[in-house]
Length: 78
Image (cartoon, rainbow, N blue to C red; front, side, top):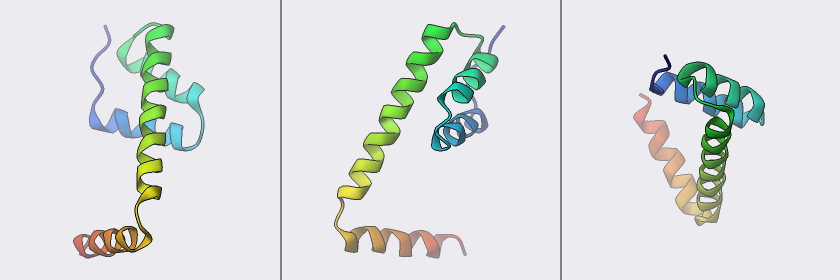
């Protein structure tokens, strides 16, 4: 019986999608959840669309806002 995705599972799927490997992402989803192919493809397609939308929103921000965001992220790592 399959299980729900953990944060680590989600991160692994996202890594595959960032590498533009939707087949690997789909396989990971199926192996964890034991879902059918159609459900897995629907999930991966929705996740890909969300990633694309997030990227477009980030790129639409003014440059100064993006740079400031990077500065703040860098401060939080210390």
